Amino acid sequence: MKSQRFYRIVFFVCLAVVVAASTPVEAKRKKKKYASLSAHSAVLYDATHSRRLFGKNIHSRVLPASTAKVMTALLVLEKLSLDRVVTVSRRAALPPPSKLNLRAGEQYKAAELLYGLLLNSANDASVAIAEAVAGSEWEFVQLMNRRARQLGAKNTKFANSSGLPTPKVSQYTTAYDMYLIFREALKYPVFRQAIHSSHKTIRSLDGRKIYLKSHNNSLFMGDWKRKVYGKTGYTRSAGPCFVGTIKKGERTLIIAVFKSSRRWDYIKYILKKYGGINVGSG
Image (cartoon, rainbow, N blue to C red; front, side, top):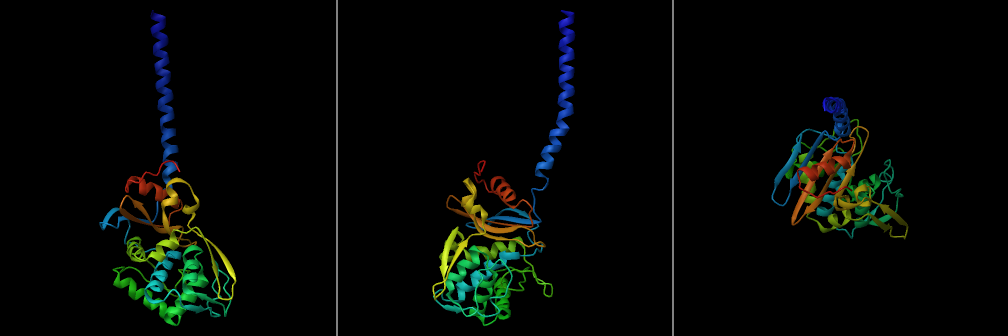
């Protein structure tokens, strides 16, 4: 009996030592796993009821990268007929990728270039339609900044129609401001249709076909990710960013995330914890 009791005591002591030794290791592993699950700034809104569900540095200035194209698209929808024929200028054909490789002198309907802007994040398309709206990209940028102020986006300044880095002119936005801009753009059926599209083929008036594939990788993923629609952005200085929407019943949620190294994981985390979205394991 005494020997059995002794071995029992030894067993539980050894078990306690093992548990005590492994717990810090597991904690470290867990901490390491979620260490980079963050962003410089982010916001989640219930746009249907104008209620903020989550926010982090929502008024902190960040580089917009290609999320700036949401404002470009909004102005096109507000000020230009989608049947308008747009002639590509030499300047519009010059911007660096991402681009459609538009050729100077080619003609497209504005609707085709809008899809190129939102799916392929095409910088040449952004310049072409900016010129069609305002005569020049510089004049278009003045419209962008004026419209941002009208929407209440007080901490936003655009320097071009694409969001490309501009060393000579500062540009910035915030997670909250981009929520305001995206919410306004969602009012347009064509915008909603475009951000829901994963692929599309557009054509110039002379018949040249360009195949588009959305830069929004969530559309090509499984489970909950297929329900997240919006506009991605990335430059080295801006980091990965995103502004988009997901439905929860009859409610429309809008999420904006800036400078997050694990963009989709962070979006999933916010939607699950603060939006009550059933994201499952996908």
